[in-house]
Length: 85
Length: 163
Figure 1: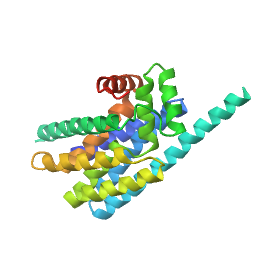
Figure 2: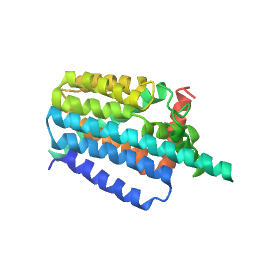
Figure 3: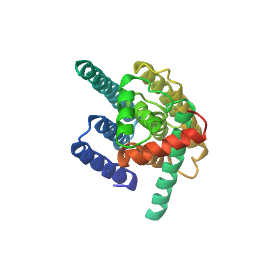
């Protein structure tokens, strides 16, 4: 295993642990974004073909859209809570 | 031999960091949150003691593929397809930006500048190191220490007079 894959793998494990440990939902979103970068890079490094790059970009765009939706939902939930308080 | 690889990886991560931070600040990511989710993340970062503009920057990265995603995708496509791969990546990032309800200039321009940088350094640093370097660069911002990173980004945006 070469040094690039090894370092990306170590960083993804560290980020995964930090997602489990952190309490705040907003900070969890930041760690999830970092993990998405790691997974997209690992897909492309493992499958060294144009199809691997397509799989990587499809994963990345899809995960960003879902992050966008989750963050938007957290914002709307906060607004509802503010009205009720 | 491994020392040379490590030096290549670290220098690639510095190049990627400078590329995506400058392009993102220039296209106004720290100025205002693009969607309501980015605003939540910015307010949270300010509450735990960081800078609000740096928080908006980090929230916007989460909510839409911007220059950081553009740099990663350009290096991945350059790695598998060569120079024309970088241009394909910038087009796909533009589509992703439009899906996330973003104007899409930061991501596209970031991918194009990353392709130019990859071409310029192609004899010295291979594209493989840029993939790892971009992951390290995003880890220093989103995964290491949010308060310090947001303060650094806020100060940089102020120095470049973009707030």
